[in-house]
Length: 554
Image (tube, rainbow, N blue to C red; front, side, top):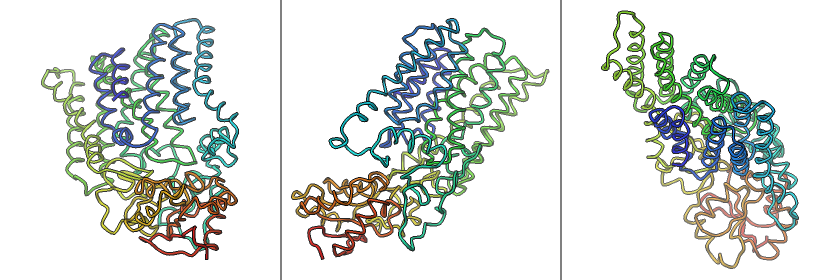
Protein backbone atom coordinates (compact mmCIF):
# COMPACT_ATOMS: atom_id res chain seq x y z
CA UNK A 1 0.00 0.00 0.00
CA UNK A 2 2.83 2.37 0.86
CA UNK A 3 4.64 1.59 -2.40
CA UNK A 4 1.54 2.21 -4.50
CA UNK A 5 0.71 5.38 -2.58
CA UNK A 6 4.22 6.81 -2.82
CA UNK A 7 4.48 6.02 -6.53
CA UNK A 8 1.11 7.71 -7.07
CA UNK A 9 2.26 10.81 -5.16
CA UNK A 10 5.58 10.99 -7.01
CA UNK A 11 4.07 10.76 -10.50
CA UNK A 12 1.07 12.95 -9.63
CA UNK A 13 3.28 15.81 -8.39
CA UNK A 14 4.66 16.42 -11.87
CA UNK A 15 2.19 14.85 -14.28
CA UNK A 16 -1.21 15.21 -12.62
CA UNK A 17 -3.69 12.99 -10.77
CA UNK A 18 -4.70 10.84 -13.75
CA UNK A 19 -1.07 9.88 -14.40
CA UNK A 20 -0.56 9.25 -10.69
CA UNK A 21 -3.58 6.99 -10.49
CA UNK A 22 -2.51 5.11 -13.60
CA UNK A 23 0.99 4.55 -12.20
CA UNK A 24 -0.40 3.29 -8.90
CA UNK A 25 -2.87 1.02 -10.67
CA UNK A 26 -0.25 -0.51 -12.93
CA UNK A 27 2.05 -1.22 -9.99
CA UNK A 28 -0.75 -2.75 -7.95
CA UNK A 29 -1.82 -5.18 -10.69
CA UNK A 30 1.66 -6.20 -11.83
CA UNK A 31 1.63 -9.97 -11.11
CA UNK A 32 5.07 -10.23 -9.54
CA UNK A 33 4.36 -7.19 -7.35
CA UNK A 34 1.01 -8.53 -6.16
CA UNK A 35 2.74 -11.78 -5.26
CA UNK A 36 5.85 -10.43 -3.55
CA UNK A 37 3.97 -7.78 -1.56
CA UNK A 38 2.15 -10.61 0.21
CA UNK A 39 5.08 -13.01 0.49
CA UNK A 40 7.58 -13.54 3.30
CA UNK A 41 10.52 -11.94 1.53
CA UNK A 42 12.48 -8.64 1.80
CA UNK A 43 11.87 -7.59 -1.82
CA UNK A 44 8.66 -5.71 -0.95
CA UNK A 45 10.46 -3.45 1.52
CA UNK A 46 13.31 -3.05 -0.98
CA UNK A 47 10.84 -1.81 -3.61
CA UNK A 48 9.35 0.72 -1.19
CA UNK A 49 12.78 2.11 -0.30
CA UNK A 50 13.79 2.32 -3.97
CA UNK A 51 10.63 4.30 -4.74
CA UNK A 52 11.34 6.53 -1.73
CA UNK A 53 14.89 7.21 -2.96
CA UNK A 54 13.55 8.18 -6.39
CA UNK A 55 10.88 10.39 -4.80
CA UNK A 56 13.55 12.22 -2.80
CA UNK A 57 15.76 12.67 -5.85
CA UNK A 58 12.95 14.15 -7.93
CA UNK A 59 12.16 16.53 -5.07
CA UNK A 60 15.82 17.55 -5.11
CA UNK A 61 15.56 18.30 -8.83
CA UNK A 62 12.72 20.72 -8.06
CA UNK A 63 14.54 22.97 -5.57
CA UNK A 64 18.12 21.77 -5.24
CA UNK A 65 18.02 21.52 -1.45
CA UNK A 66 20.65 19.42 0.29
CA UNK A 67 18.13 17.69 2.53
CA UNK A 68 16.55 15.84 -0.38
CA UNK A 69 19.91 14.46 -1.51
CA UNK A 70 20.72 13.35 2.03
CA UNK A 71 17.30 11.70 2.32
CA UNK A 72 17.82 9.96 -1.01
CA UNK A 73 21.14 8.55 0.17
CA UNK A 74 19.60 7.42 3.45
CA UNK A 75 16.84 5.54 1.64
CA UNK A 76 19.44 3.80 -0.53
CA UNK A 77 21.40 2.88 2.60
CA UNK A 78 18.31 1.40 4.21
CA UNK A 79 17.70 -0.48 0.98
CA UNK A 80 21.18 -1.96 1.36
CA UNK A 81 20.29 -3.19 4.83
CA UNK A 82 17.20 -4.77 3.26
CA UNK A 83 18.83 -6.68 0.40
CA UNK A 84 22.43 -5.56 0.16
CA UNK A 85 23.77 -4.54 -3.26
CA UNK A 86 20.46 -5.02 -5.10
CA UNK A 87 19.49 -1.44 -4.25
CA UNK A 88 22.60 -0.08 -5.94
CA UNK A 89 21.06 -0.73 -9.34
CA UNK A 90 19.05 2.49 -9.06
CA UNK A 91 22.03 4.65 -8.08
CA UNK A 92 23.44 5.30 -11.60
CA UNK A 93 20.09 6.62 -12.84
CA UNK A 94 19.56 8.80 -9.77
CA UNK A 95 23.07 10.26 -9.94
CA UNK A 96 22.70 11.00 -13.66
CA UNK A 97 19.35 12.65 -13.02
CA UNK A 98 20.81 15.19 -10.61
CA UNK A 99 23.96 15.75 -12.63
CA UNK A 100 21.81 16.61 -15.65
CA UNK A 101 18.85 18.39 -14.06
CA UNK A 102 19.85 19.58 -10.59
CA UNK A 103 19.24 23.37 -10.19
CA UNK A 104 22.61 24.43 -8.67
CA UNK A 105 25.87 24.90 -10.53
CA UNK A 106 27.83 21.80 -11.51
CA UNK A 107 30.28 22.04 -8.62
CA UNK A 108 27.46 22.23 -6.09
CA UNK A 109 25.62 19.36 -7.75
CA UNK A 110 28.70 17.16 -7.48
CA UNK A 111 29.19 18.13 -3.82
CA UNK A 112 25.55 17.33 -3.09
CA UNK A 113 25.89 13.91 -4.70
CA UNK A 114 28.91 13.22 -2.50
CA UNK A 115 26.75 14.20 0.48
CA UNK A 116 24.11 11.73 -0.70
CA UNK A 117 26.82 9.08 -0.96
CA UNK A 118 27.99 9.84 2.58
CA UNK A 119 24.42 9.57 3.83
CA UNK A 120 24.11 6.20 2.13
CA UNK A 121 27.34 4.96 3.72
CA UNK A 122 26.25 6.07 7.20
CA UNK A 123 22.75 4.56 6.85
CA UNK A 124 24.15 1.18 5.81
CA UNK A 125 27.70 1.21 7.14
CA UNK A 126 26.96 1.28 10.86
CA UNK A 127 25.57 -2.24 10.64
CA UNK A 128 28.40 -3.57 8.46
CA UNK A 129 30.94 -2.07 10.86
CA UNK A 130 29.19 -3.49 13.91
CA UNK A 131 29.04 -6.99 12.46
CA UNK A 132 32.62 -6.89 11.23
CA UNK A 133 34.02 -5.68 14.57
CA UNK A 134 31.86 -7.86 16.82
CA UNK A 135 33.74 -10.94 18.10
CA UNK A 136 32.83 -13.95 15.96
CA UNK A 137 32.58 -16.12 19.07
CA UNK A 138 29.51 -14.23 20.34
CA UNK A 139 27.51 -13.61 17.16
CA UNK A 140 25.80 -15.81 14.60
CA UNK A 141 27.69 -17.17 11.61
CA UNK A 142 27.35 -14.89 8.59
CA UNK A 143 25.19 -17.12 6.41
CA UNK A 144 26.22 -17.36 2.78
CA UNK A 145 29.88 -16.62 3.50
CA UNK A 146 32.57 -19.26 3.71
CA UNK A 147 34.80 -17.34 6.14
CA UNK A 148 32.22 -15.84 8.50
CA UNK A 149 32.61 -12.37 6.99
CA UNK A 150 29.86 -9.88 6.18
CA UNK A 151 32.16 -8.18 3.66
CA UNK A 152 32.74 -11.50 1.89
CA UNK A 153 28.99 -12.07 1.74
CA UNK A 154 28.34 -8.54 0.45
CA UNK A 155 31.01 -8.42 -2.23
CA UNK A 156 31.11 -12.12 -3.13
CA UNK A 157 28.01 -14.30 -2.89
CA UNK A 158 25.62 -11.32 -2.92
CA UNK A 159 27.83 -9.12 -5.08
CA UNK A 160 30.13 -9.93 -7.98
CA UNK A 161 29.18 -13.59 -7.76
CA UNK A 162 25.67 -12.72 -8.92
CA UNK A 163 27.14 -11.05 -11.99
CA UNK A 164 29.85 -13.49 -13.06
CA UNK A 165 28.40 -16.72 -11.65
CA UNK A 166 31.41 -17.51 -9.43
CA UNK A 167 29.47 -17.95 -6.19
CA UNK A 168 31.16 -20.06 -3.57
CA UNK A 169 28.47 -21.82 -1.58
CA UNK A 170 25.78 -21.34 -4.22
CA UNK A 171 22.78 -23.60 -4.60
CA UNK A 172 23.71 -25.64 -7.63
CA UNK A 173 26.13 -28.41 -8.57
CA UNK A 174 29.24 -27.19 -10.30
CA UNK A 175 29.17 -23.95 -8.30
CA UNK A 176 31.73 -23.28 -5.62
CA UNK A 177 31.52 -25.44 -2.54
CA UNK A 178 28.73 -27.75 -3.74
CA UNK A 179 29.33 -31.48 -3.73
CA UNK A 180 26.91 -34.15 -4.87
CA UNK A 181 26.75 -37.73 -3.58
CA UNK A 182 27.79 -40.57 -5.90
CA UNK A 183 25.07 -41.61 -8.30
CA UNK A 184 22.84 -38.57 -7.70
CA UNK A 185 21.07 -37.38 -10.85
CA UNK A 186 19.48 -34.00 -11.32
CA UNK A 187 15.80 -33.79 -12.26
CA UNK A 188 15.09 -33.07 -15.90
CA UNK A 189 15.73 -29.44 -16.81
CA UNK A 190 18.17 -28.87 -13.93
CA UNK A 191 21.40 -29.92 -15.59
CA UNK A 192 24.66 -28.67 -14.18
CA UNK A 193 24.74 -25.01 -15.14
CA UNK A 194 27.47 -23.22 -16.92
CA UNK A 195 27.69 -19.48 -16.68
CA UNK A 196 24.40 -17.83 -17.40
CA UNK A 197 22.54 -21.05 -18.02
CA UNK A 198 21.20 -24.27 -16.55
CA UNK A 199 19.03 -24.11 -13.45
CA UNK A 200 18.83 -20.30 -13.40
CA UNK A 201 17.97 -19.90 -17.07
CA UNK A 202 19.94 -18.52 -19.98
CA UNK A 203 21.22 -14.98 -19.74
CA UNK A 204 20.71 -12.62 -22.65
CA UNK A 205 19.21 -9.29 -23.58
CA UNK A 206 15.75 -10.86 -24.04
CA UNK A 207 15.75 -12.67 -20.69
CA UNK A 208 12.78 -10.69 -19.39
CA UNK A 209 10.72 -12.15 -22.24
CA UNK A 210 11.61 -15.75 -21.46
CA UNK A 211 8.58 -17.76 -20.28
CA UNK A 212 9.92 -17.86 -16.71
CA UNK A 213 9.95 -14.06 -16.44
CA UNK A 214 7.52 -12.72 -19.04
CA UNK A 215 4.31 -13.33 -17.12
CA UNK A 216 5.80 -11.72 -14.03
CA UNK A 217 6.85 -8.37 -15.47
CA UNK A 218 7.03 -8.06 -19.29
CA UNK A 219 3.43 -7.03 -20.03
CA UNK A 220 4.18 -3.31 -20.35
CA UNK A 221 7.94 -3.42 -20.81
CA UNK A 222 7.81 -2.49 -24.54
CA UNK A 223 5.41 0.37 -23.78
CA UNK A 224 7.74 1.66 -21.05
CA UNK A 225 10.72 1.66 -23.43
CA UNK A 226 8.65 3.48 -26.03
CA UNK A 227 7.65 6.04 -23.38
CA UNK A 228 11.32 6.76 -22.60
CA UNK A 229 12.07 7.51 -26.25
CA UNK A 230 8.87 9.54 -26.70
CA UNK A 231 9.43 11.88 -23.75
CA UNK A 232 13.15 12.36 -24.38
CA UNK A 233 12.45 13.33 -27.99
CA UNK A 234 9.60 15.68 -27.06
CA UNK A 235 11.63 17.36 -24.30
CA UNK A 236 14.99 17.43 -26.08
CA UNK A 237 15.04 21.22 -26.50
CA UNK A 238 13.80 22.22 -23.06
CA UNK A 239 15.95 23.78 -20.35
CA UNK A 240 18.48 21.62 -18.53
CA UNK A 241 16.37 21.42 -15.38
CA UNK A 242 13.22 20.26 -17.16
CA UNK A 243 11.23 18.12 -14.72
CA UNK A 244 9.62 15.86 -17.32
CA UNK A 245 12.96 14.82 -18.72
CA UNK A 246 14.46 14.45 -15.23
CA UNK A 247 11.67 12.07 -14.22
CA UNK A 248 12.23 9.94 -17.31
CA UNK A 249 15.98 9.84 -16.68
CA UNK A 250 15.39 8.70 -13.08
CA UNK A 251 12.77 6.05 -13.81
CA UNK A 252 14.34 5.10 -17.14
CA UNK A 253 17.79 4.75 -15.57
CA UNK A 254 16.29 2.48 -12.92
CA UNK A 255 14.55 0.35 -15.57
CA UNK A 256 17.47 0.10 -18.00
CA UNK A 257 20.27 -0.55 -15.50
CA UNK A 258 18.25 -3.05 -13.50
CA UNK A 259 16.77 -4.76 -16.54
CA UNK A 260 20.11 -5.11 -18.33
CA UNK A 261 21.77 -6.39 -15.15
CA UNK A 262 19.06 -8.98 -14.59
CA UNK A 263 19.25 -10.00 -18.24
CA UNK A 264 23.00 -10.53 -18.37
CA UNK A 265 23.88 -11.71 -14.84
CA UNK A 266 25.37 -15.20 -14.85
CA UNK A 267 24.80 -16.05 -11.19
CA UNK A 268 21.73 -16.85 -9.13
CA UNK A 269 18.60 -15.38 -10.69
CA UNK A 270 14.95 -16.03 -9.88
CA UNK A 271 11.87 -14.70 -11.65
CA UNK A 272 10.60 -12.90 -8.56
CA UNK A 273 13.63 -10.58 -8.63
CA UNK A 274 11.79 -8.76 -11.42
CA UNK A 275 9.55 -7.07 -8.84
CA UNK A 276 12.29 -4.42 -8.81
CA UNK A 277 11.25 -3.49 -12.37
CA UNK A 278 7.58 -2.97 -11.56
CA UNK A 279 7.73 0.64 -10.25
CA UNK A 280 9.73 2.14 -13.16
CA UNK A 281 7.58 0.37 -15.74
CA UNK A 282 4.39 1.64 -14.10
CA UNK A 283 5.75 5.17 -13.74
CA UNK A 284 7.12 5.37 -17.28
CA UNK A 285 3.92 4.13 -18.92
CA UNK A 286 1.89 6.64 -16.92
CA UNK A 287 4.32 9.46 -17.78
CA UNK A 288 4.27 8.46 -21.44
CA UNK A 289 0.47 8.59 -21.47
CA UNK A 290 0.42 11.99 -19.76
CA UNK A 291 3.02 13.59 -22.01
CA UNK A 292 1.61 11.94 -25.13
CA UNK A 293 -1.85 13.27 -24.30
CA UNK A 294 -0.50 16.79 -23.91
CA UNK A 295 1.19 16.51 -27.31
CA UNK A 296 -1.59 14.57 -29.03
CA UNK A 297 -2.02 17.25 -31.69
CA UNK A 298 1.21 16.01 -33.30
CA UNK A 299 0.60 13.31 -35.86
CA UNK A 300 3.76 11.35 -35.06
CA UNK A 301 2.90 11.28 -31.34
CA UNK A 302 -0.41 9.59 -32.11
CA UNK A 303 1.46 7.13 -34.34
CA UNK A 304 3.80 6.30 -31.47
CA UNK A 305 0.76 5.80 -29.26
CA UNK A 306 -0.65 3.31 -31.74
CA UNK A 307 2.70 1.51 -31.78
CA UNK A 308 2.76 1.30 -27.98
CA UNK A 309 -0.78 -0.09 -27.83
CA UNK A 310 -0.02 -2.66 -30.54
CA UNK A 311 3.18 -3.71 -28.77
CA UNK A 312 1.24 -4.14 -25.52
CA UNK A 313 -1.36 -6.33 -27.21
CA UNK A 314 1.31 -8.41 -28.90
CA UNK A 315 3.18 -8.90 -25.64
CA UNK A 316 -0.01 -9.99 -23.88
CA UNK A 317 -0.70 -12.53 -26.64
CA UNK A 318 2.83 -13.92 -26.33
CA UNK A 319 2.60 -14.26 -22.52
CA UNK A 320 -0.86 -15.80 -22.48
CA UNK A 321 0.14 -18.21 -25.25
CA UNK A 322 2.58 -19.79 -22.76
CA UNK A 323 -0.46 -21.20 -20.95
CA UNK A 324 -2.83 -21.90 -23.85
CA UNK A 325 -5.26 -24.00 -21.80
CA UNK A 326 -5.76 -21.29 -19.17
CA UNK A 327 -8.62 -18.93 -20.14
CA UNK A 328 -7.83 -19.13 -23.88
CA UNK A 329 -10.44 -16.48 -24.66
CA UNK A 330 -8.43 -13.87 -22.78
CA UNK A 331 -5.57 -13.52 -25.24
CA UNK A 332 -8.01 -13.14 -28.13
CA UNK A 333 -10.00 -10.50 -26.27
CA UNK A 334 -6.93 -8.50 -25.28
CA UNK A 335 -5.49 -8.69 -28.77
CA UNK A 336 -8.79 -7.53 -30.25
CA UNK A 337 -8.99 -4.60 -27.82
CA UNK A 338 -5.40 -3.58 -28.62
CA UNK A 339 -6.12 -3.81 -32.34
CA UNK A 340 -9.23 -1.63 -31.98
CA UNK A 341 -7.34 1.00 -29.97
CA UNK A 342 -4.36 1.02 -32.34
CA UNK A 343 -6.55 1.27 -35.45
CA UNK A 344 -8.64 4.02 -33.87
CA UNK A 345 -5.48 5.97 -33.15
CA UNK A 346 -4.28 5.43 -36.70
CA UNK A 347 -7.54 6.76 -38.12
CA UNK A 348 -6.86 10.05 -36.36
CA UNK A 349 -3.78 10.42 -38.56
CA UNK A 350 -6.01 10.95 -41.59
CA UNK A 351 -6.40 14.68 -42.32
CA UNK A 352 -10.16 14.45 -42.96
CA UNK A 353 -10.85 12.51 -39.77
CA UNK A 354 -12.24 14.54 -36.90
CA UNK A 355 -11.46 13.27 -33.44
CA UNK A 356 -14.66 13.03 -31.43
CA UNK A 357 -15.30 12.36 -27.78
CA UNK A 358 -16.73 8.95 -28.67
CA UNK A 359 -13.56 7.98 -30.52
CA UNK A 360 -11.38 9.22 -27.67
CA UNK A 361 -13.43 7.21 -25.19
CA UNK A 362 -13.15 4.09 -27.35
CA UNK A 363 -9.38 4.46 -27.58
CA UNK A 364 -9.05 5.01 -23.83
CA UNK A 365 -11.17 2.02 -22.80
CA UNK A 366 -9.66 -0.37 -25.34
CA UNK A 367 -6.07 0.68 -24.58
CA UNK A 368 -6.57 0.47 -20.80
CA UNK A 369 -8.18 -2.96 -21.13
CA UNK A 370 -5.32 -4.28 -23.26
CA UNK A 371 -2.81 -2.91 -20.74
CA UNK A 372 -4.29 -4.32 -17.53
CA UNK A 373 -6.62 -7.23 -18.34
CA UNK A 374 -3.91 -9.87 -18.60
CA UNK A 375 -2.11 -8.61 -15.53
CA UNK A 376 -5.32 -8.46 -13.50
CA UNK A 377 -6.13 -12.05 -14.51
CA UNK A 378 -2.64 -13.26 -13.53
CA UNK A 379 -2.84 -11.35 -10.25
CA UNK A 380 -6.29 -12.72 -9.42
CA UNK A 381 -5.09 -16.26 -10.09
CA UNK A 382 -2.05 -15.65 -7.90
CA UNK A 383 -4.13 -14.41 -4.97
CA UNK A 384 -6.60 -17.28 -5.34
CA UNK A 385 -3.89 -19.99 -5.33
CA UNK A 386 -1.63 -19.68 -2.27
CA UNK A 387 2.05 -20.45 -2.79
CA UNK A 388 4.60 -21.90 -0.42
CA UNK A 389 8.32 -22.51 -0.57
CA UNK A 390 11.34 -20.30 -1.10
CA UNK A 391 10.91 -19.75 -4.86
CA UNK A 392 7.50 -18.67 -6.15
CA UNK A 393 6.04 -17.19 -9.31
CA UNK A 394 2.82 -15.40 -10.13
CA UNK A 395 0.11 -16.56 -12.49
CA UNK A 396 -0.93 -19.98 -13.80
CA UNK A 397 1.62 -22.74 -14.20
CA UNK A 398 3.19 -23.06 -17.61
CA UNK A 399 5.48 -25.93 -16.66
CA UNK A 400 8.66 -24.00 -17.46
CA UNK A 401 11.05 -25.33 -14.85
CA UNK A 402 11.10 -25.15 -11.06
CA UNK A 403 10.37 -21.86 -9.45
CA UNK A 404 9.89 -20.46 -12.92
CA UNK A 405 6.82 -18.93 -14.23
CA UNK A 406 4.20 -18.44 -14.52
CA UNK A 407 3.09 -20.27 -11.42
CA UNK A 408 6.34 -21.71 -10.06
CA UNK A 409 6.65 -22.88 -6.49
CA UNK A 410 4.39 -25.40 -4.79
CA UNK A 411 0.73 -24.57 -5.17
CA UNK A 412 -0.87 -25.50 -1.85
CA UNK A 413 -4.32 -25.98 -3.32
CA UNK A 414 -3.06 -28.56 -5.80
CA UNK A 415 -1.14 -30.85 -3.44
CA UNK A 416 -2.68 -34.28 -3.00
CA UNK A 417 -3.01 -36.34 0.19
CA UNK A 418 0.19 -38.23 -0.61
CA UNK A 419 2.24 -35.04 -0.46
CA UNK A 420 2.82 -35.12 3.30
CA UNK A 421 6.59 -35.49 3.14
CA UNK A 422 8.96 -33.88 0.66
CA UNK A 423 10.87 -36.39 -1.41
CA UNK A 424 13.19 -35.57 -4.28
CA UNK A 425 11.43 -37.95 -6.66
CA UNK A 426 8.16 -36.02 -6.16
CA UNK A 427 9.43 -32.63 -7.15
CA UNK A 428 8.95 -32.89 -10.89
CA UNK A 429 5.39 -34.18 -10.44
CA UNK A 430 4.48 -31.25 -8.23
CA UNK A 431 6.26 -28.70 -10.39
CA UNK A 432 7.72 -26.96 -7.39
CA UNK A 433 11.38 -27.86 -7.66
CA UNK A 434 13.67 -29.61 -5.19
CA UNK A 435 13.17 -29.17 -1.46
CA UNK A 436 16.29 -27.06 -1.03
CA UNK A 437 14.33 -24.36 -2.88
CA UNK A 438 10.71 -25.16 -2.04
CA UNK A 439 11.13 -26.11 1.62
CA UNK A 440 10.15 -29.28 3.46
CA UNK A 441 6.68 -30.44 4.44
CA UNK A 442 6.50 -32.51 7.63
CA UNK A 443 4.15 -35.50 7.60
CA UNK A 444 2.03 -36.39 10.64
CA UNK A 445 4.19 -39.31 11.78
CA UNK A 446 7.50 -37.46 11.65
CA UNK A 447 5.89 -34.45 13.36
CA UNK A 448 4.65 -36.64 16.21
CA UNK A 449 8.09 -38.24 16.49
CA UNK A 450 9.83 -34.86 16.77
CA UNK A 451 7.39 -33.66 19.42
CA UNK A 452 8.08 -36.67 21.64
CA UNK A 453 10.09 -35.41 24.66
CA UNK A 454 10.75 -32.22 22.67
CA UNK A 455 11.25 -30.01 25.73
CA UNK A 456 14.30 -32.04 26.78
CA UNK A 457 16.33 -30.83 23.79
CA UNK A 458 17.68 -27.55 22.48
CA UNK A 459 16.91 -28.77 18.94
CA UNK A 460 14.32 -31.47 18.29
CA UNK A 461 16.18 -32.28 15.09
CA UNK A 462 18.94 -31.21 12.74
CA UNK A 463 18.94 -31.35 8.96
CA UNK A 464 20.96 -29.85 6.12
CA UNK A 465 19.87 -26.43 4.90
CA UNK A 466 17.43 -23.83 6.19
CA UNK A 467 14.69 -24.62 3.69
CA UNK A 468 14.75 -28.29 4.67
CA UNK A 469 14.60 -27.34 8.36
CA UNK A 470 11.82 -24.79 7.90
CA UNK A 471 8.92 -27.17 7.31
CA UNK A 472 9.73 -29.24 10.37
CA UNK A 473 10.14 -26.18 12.57
CA UNK A 474 6.82 -24.75 11.39
CA UNK A 475 5.07 -28.08 11.96
CA UNK A 476 6.45 -28.64 15.48
CA UNK A 477 6.93 -25.02 16.59
CA UNK A 478 10.21 -26.26 18.07
CA UNK A 479 13.80 -25.38 17.06
CA UNK A 480 15.31 -27.40 14.19
CA UNK A 481 19.01 -26.88 13.44
CA UNK A 482 19.75 -25.94 9.79
CA UNK A 483 23.22 -27.40 9.27
CA UNK A 484 25.21 -25.38 6.76
CA UNK A 485 22.85 -22.39 6.85
CA UNK A 486 20.54 -21.44 4.01
CA UNK A 487 22.05 -23.59 1.26
CA UNK A 488 23.73 -26.21 3.44
CA UNK A 489 27.12 -24.92 2.30
CA UNK A 490 28.17 -22.74 5.25
CA UNK A 491 30.93 -24.12 7.49
CA UNK A 492 28.72 -23.94 10.56
CA UNK A 493 28.50 -25.80 12.77
CA UNK A 494 31.75 -27.72 12.40
CA UNK A 495 31.81 -31.48 12.80
CA UNK A 496 33.48 -31.09 16.21
CA UNK A 497 30.83 -28.63 17.38
CA UNK A 498 28.04 -30.89 16.16
CA UNK A 499 29.56 -33.92 17.87
CA UNK A 500 29.73 -31.95 21.11
CA UNK A 501 26.06 -30.93 20.81
CA UNK A 502 25.18 -34.61 20.34
CA UNK A 503 27.37 -35.68 23.29
CA UNK A 504 25.65 -33.07 25.46
CA UNK A 505 22.23 -34.45 24.49
CA UNK A 506 21.09 -31.20 22.88
CA UNK A 507 19.88 -32.68 19.52
CA UNK A 508 17.37 -35.52 19.33
CA UNK A 509 17.20 -36.52 15.66
CA UNK A 510 19.00 -36.03 12.37
CA UNK A 511 16.71 -35.88 9.31
CA UNK A 512 18.19 -36.93 5.97
CA UNK A 513 15.60 -36.29 3.30
CA UNK A 514 15.71 -38.98 0.63
CA UNK A 515 16.97 -37.23 -2.49
CA UNK A 516 15.75 -33.93 -1.12
CA UNK A 517 17.77 -31.78 -3.49
CA UNK A 518 21.14 -30.15 -3.02
CA UNK A 519 20.22 -28.79 0.39
CA UNK A 520 19.58 -32.35 1.55
CA UNK A 521 23.21 -33.29 0.89
CA UNK A 522 25.10 -30.06 1.52
CA UNK A 523 28.84 -29.83 1.07
CA UNK A 524 32.00 -29.53 3.09
CA UNK A 525 31.12 -29.43 6.78
CA UNK A 526 27.50 -30.51 6.23
CA UNK A 527 28.68 -33.50 4.21
CA UNK A 528 31.12 -34.46 6.97
CA UNK A 529 28.37 -34.28 9.59
CA UNK A 530 26.00 -36.37 7.48
CA UNK A 531 28.68 -39.00 6.87
CA UNK A 532 29.48 -39.20 10.60
CA UNK A 533 25.80 -39.55 11.49
CA UNK A 534 25.32 -42.35 8.96
CA UNK A 535 28.30 -44.26 10.36
CA UNK A 536 27.40 -43.74 14.01
CA UNK A 537 23.61 -44.09 14.20
CA UNK A 538 21.04 -46.50 12.79
CA UNK A 539 18.50 -45.17 10.26
CA UNK A 540 14.77 -45.69 10.03
CA UNK A 541 12.20 -44.29 7.63
CA UNK A 542 9.28 -42.16 8.84
CA UNK A 543 6.91 -40.50 6.36
CA UNK A 544 9.48 -41.13 3.63
CA UNK A 545 12.23 -39.32 5.59
CA UNK A 546 15.35 -41.09 6.84
CA UNK A 547 15.60 -40.43 10.58
CA UNK A 548 18.58 -41.01 12.88
CA UNK A 549 18.09 -41.02 16.66
CA UNK A 550 21.16 -39.16 17.93
CA UNK A 551 20.60 -40.44 21.47
CA UNK A 552 21.00 -44.08 20.41
CA UNK A 553 24.34 -44.93 18.72
CA UNK A 554 24.72 -48.20 16.87
